[in-house]
Length: 475
Image (cartoon, rainbow, N blue to C red; front, side, top):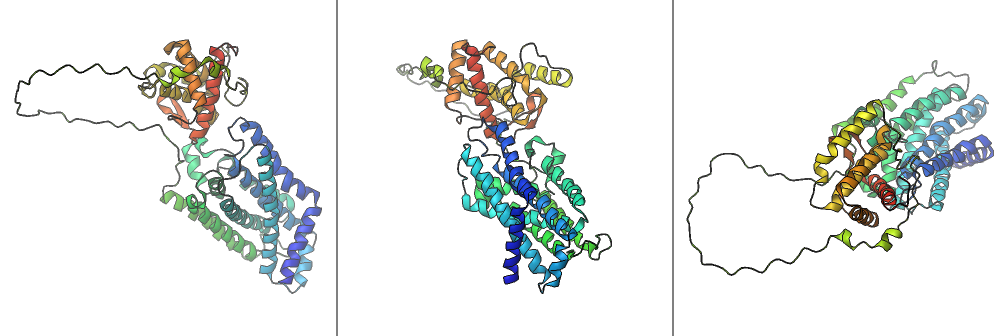
């Protein structure tokens, strides 16, 4: 036990003396956090919905780059050959390495979380569950890092192997790109990457239902980590002269691949591939089968009844209570039209090629779109705002042109004063009503996945439209 604790202490001291290790372990995650904050700073709670992705990137970088780079570098310098002379079993060395790296990842995660709280993020919904989920994510990726360290013969080889895992997991593994933005085939592929389950488990603890809603993700992470740690211990090499291709026991890579395949296959079998999304309110339809209806009809002459008093006039619509003071008091600080969030193309910026066809399909379909033909004008406008918000949430090429189409449709459909009040009501009550996360029936394929993003983008577009209607913003 003393050898175990001593090696943990040595590993930590060497890490904190290494400037490059500090750079990649602590500065690298903060750079990602800053980039995400720039992209999502206009969210109601900045970084809250991205914390699962940010913490996953932090663990992924520290475990799949930092850990194997350190191990291979020490092996090349002969450090591990000296450790072999000590009467310490291999499992103790591997376990102490895992514990030391976990402490490093935990401090990096706490730093990232602290900075996020400092820039406006609220406290996670389930802090204790977040700690457990973070531990499971760290265990999974540390196991993967051990395998990389045992397969790589040099530090450059670590970088190459790490990139082969890091980049696919960022792009199609659900870490840096939201699964809802990916095509269907990529969502199926992501089921075989542990990064997807890392984001799901962490985000469920930050904004969701906690560990109870992410049991499968935790199981997937634990299975991946266990397979990696066992394979890493069996493939352990003390000397740099021992090459991976010439070493025995290469078959232990098999359990690692088998764990990934088992998790993905189980996810496919259980139907966990589809991205959950809140759809619009369902509309029930009743179909009456055709055919003759036979009935006995008895005609009776009822005595005349006194006429009922006329019904009272319907109450005024909620938007009618909006005052000019409420319109003037809105917060008109919104992202610029040329920015990444809620963009609006100027009138002289015309779409081309495929984008032009999509714009025309939406323009021609809005008039007959059944979602915007309810009896509630406020809900109709909400749905129309979603037509601009969904492509913005997915970051589609057509996102810049559809807001102008929606705005022109709204001013053609409603009087200016009424439209201004309806939009103001929506801004003041952003969580009311229903929202749609896809507009495929208008020819725009893709789902936002997270309805709260659509609501926030709808809020921003409502502000921009009010600013145009009132002359506060230039059209």
